[in-house]
Length: 207
Image (cartoon, helix red, strand yellow):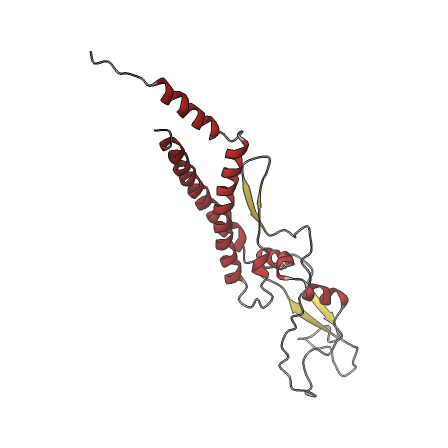
């Protein structure tokens, strides 16, 4: 029978490497969080792309409001479109006017404080826009604006409330769930491969 000589020193050293690879080790935990942050940012880019496709006209770049979070106490992360806990300032962007100076038409009503506030949000604070587009606004009351009463507007079979205007509803795009789940599944696979590569590199150092 052929005997095998076991090098105890190598086994002890490889055990140390494996222990270092455990998530309870602070150094290894930071390394794993770095890998998690890497793959979740790649996943975020895919969700941002889906958001841009859902909002064709996005001059204030609401797609940038897609957020990520890497957990500190447990190994994991998420992608979300919730509001940030801190504000990021405001934007001075104004929609371009299509009317010439003095030309009648368009909206001559004074902008409400709520509308002005919504329009002034920075791109990173416009997660509510993404939620509107994702979930739609068909379940809420129809968006209606009231005009200054004018007797020349008559009630007829086409217009039961002539002094109001229907602003319509936002149809749900449902982009976030599909794009987010696909991106996170791909991120998990990528993370597993990265961890295997890192662990193999650590073990090779002991040989």
